[in-house]
Length: 67
Image (cartoon, rainbow, N blue to C red; front, side):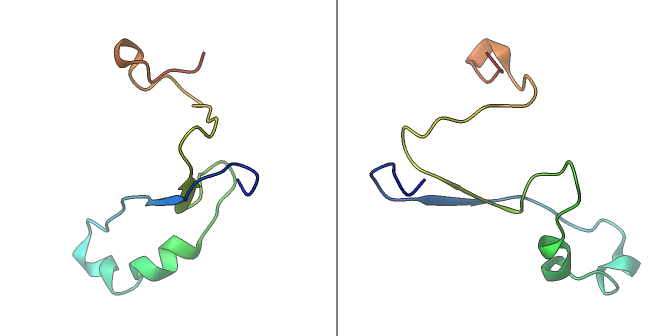
């Protein structure tokens, strides 16, 4: 990303705890620090014109697909 000109934009994952009892046991700040294998990072930094690859087809009709 350092070699691509332009400013970076930061995107964060959306998460919430649905079980109210667990809300205080697992604060969102703690959950955002976890990085389990196979899961994306909480924070994604991108620049305009940076190549990205989707790992699964999200919306092929609108072009959000791998390939």
